[in-house]
Length: 178
Ligand code: HEC
Ligand code: HEC
Image 1 (spheres, rainbow, N blue to C red):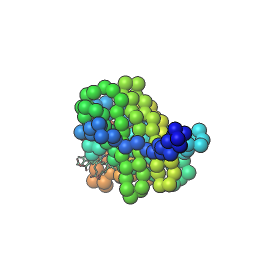
Image 2 (image 1 turned 90 degrees about the vertical axis):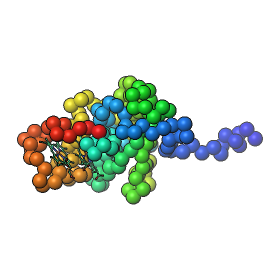
Image 3 (image 1 turned 180 degrees about the vertical axis):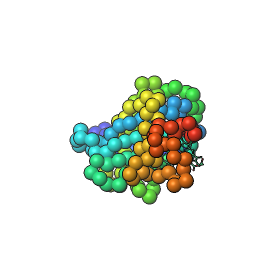
């Protein structure tokens, strides 16, 4: 009987926020971005670039750029901890999903060392994700990964101030990160 009990418990691939967790309004206090990779459960090879970053629109967003040339994807996520306080320094859950892609992301983010480990389901495919926090300069790198380049997720409008054309690191002169 005991063995039977063991066999039939299903462990979900993705963990969403449990009932004891509260959303952290506005996200965590340290707005430096996290850079990493998606890997298949069965392989150590990197399948996609992963970015978790705050956006000047007030959200924290995930960006997934597959190495095989499939379209890049992004969606907004939220952070959760027991207090709901952004100043609490402990581990937080980062979780979000987009019904239309569809995609779902769940990870434990250790704020102290700046490490993220979790899972992504993108379409039908399950991935492991790990990422590390970049330094303060990396914040504008993250802005550019979604807003600049040949095929950005959200291009700047034609009437946007052009100062970034000569220096792509000027975003935070006029915008805030998060
Ligand atoms: C993961 C991708 C991503 C990253 C990183 C990102 N953004 Fe965004 N940003 C978006 C998307 C997508 C939108 C459009 C949001 C919408 O319309 O809901 C947006 C919107 C904005 C807007 C318009 C806000 C508004 O209310 O109209 C500003 C300003 C902005 N971003 C600035 C930045 C800056 C500055 C950074 C770097 C600190 C940054 N973003 C990083 C994806 C990103
Ligand atoms: C010289 C000031 C200045 C700099 C530098 C600047 N922006 Fe802007 N940005 C603006 C202004 C002004 C607007 C239009 C008003 C608004 O939406 O706040 C704007 C609007 C935006 C929007 C909203 C576009 C939309 O869909 O409406 C995004 C996204 C954005 N900026 C991203 C960036 C990024 C990324 C950088 C750095 C590469 C950057 N900006 C650098 C001033 C600046």
